[in-house]
Length: 586
Ligand code: ADP
View 1 (tube, helix red, strand yellow):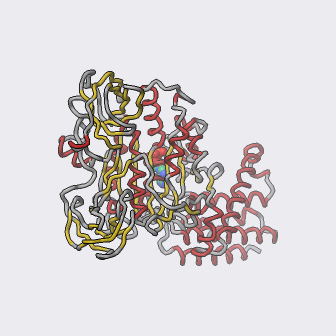
View 2: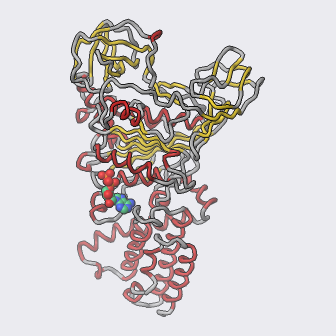
View 3: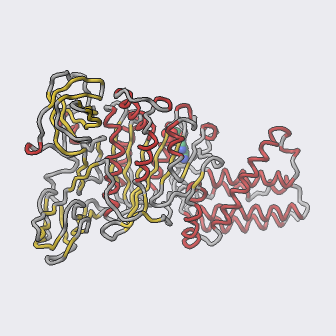
């Protein structure tokens, strides 16, 4: 976060009132969104309303000992993040204070007050390699050099967006801190590896493009039925215990993004502790390096102050945009946006604003839209292409999707993965309801799957969707009259649908092999079930009783494809077996 320097400090104000995280001050010379230091302890806050002589501030720290009359000073700059090498492998709170630095300063995992820390290490040196030469013209956002930030990621050093740009007059390879000048321009501008950017403002980019590449997740039901694009938006609503966190972790681990920004927003403290402890242990399956080498964690537990929860998603998305500008595909996971909305609600009620639906502020929908709007597949100002995909978990109270946060999110996002308590209870995981979920990216991503996986990808998926739909309808009849009352072909459809659910839709995140399913294997499983379907219906047409068909010995092997490492061989062999065993029946 930006820190005040003595030269920018404006005239001091005085605290007039304190209501939890909301403090009002009088006589403060500050602008909207300025960062201010509040009270004798200098707690960090942000200006959220100015009316005449009264300035309203949300404070990112506990305000219990703050009293009217104490001073308030403005830094004169908006709430900003520090951008530069050192953000990967970091764990921040909602206003980008590194948790380890805070802990050292305070010797406690719980944040105390009045402690500030820069978002990136100002003393560490980095090996800078120039990408431009003396005499080259550079413009805002142009890449001027690279730094090996972690074993997985090269950090691209860029001309800050608010610079003018010009001709390079000095640049040299070497070891530098983020505050050292690495490039000098003829107009006197000096470029360092450290940028700042106000969190509530999207970083500039050229037009958004229609995304045509999937963010491959390695999760069959997502890639196969409800894919998200690189640069797309998705919501995962679900009641407690239905698998939101497991799904978000699976995506963080397996999605083919270059960079993951994980915003743990106000979930129960112990869950975030798990994330903070688990993530540093995880290995990146594609490189074998630590997963944290390409991950930035922002952790705001519900025992941290509410205003820091409000800001954490903005901190996260600004960091994501910065890596996008380097030409990377970034996936941002926010768990959970409901906690963020609750923080908005709490602050709004302290401000005594007119409440909207269920007490949320009237601007809830607009804030959600602004946040998801920052996702996209972009051509960047510097000519690279990059994307920010945003996946937000929603935790509707009681699992009721009609509540305002879920409803407003659904109007914005294009992928909806509906978690279902009944499925979770039946241990059908991932407990994603295939009736309610959807992806509006499906058609635009089909060409990619056709080209990279199989030309029959769309048809095979449609076949599976139709069988599952038919099963849904048949189940209603079965509940009334029992399965045996159905005609034989419908009984066989139910059997095929059962394999679709058990072998394809279910996937065990906790199994070493099954946890990740590449698209070719996802397709292969469907193809094997379809082979069973076609051979089985041929047998039925030839007069074989349905019980004999469903009893065929090879069929249950379909359910074990997921856990096979040598799945290609296994599937080929299984398809042959299914064909020969079913043909033997007639
Ligand atoms: P939520 O975040 O919605 O409260 P969790 O993500 O913590 O729910 O999931 C609850 C439990 O469900 C997990 O501890 C795990 O046992 C089980 N679970 C969820 N998804 C899967 C999955 N894909 N594979 C295996 N188990 C799962």
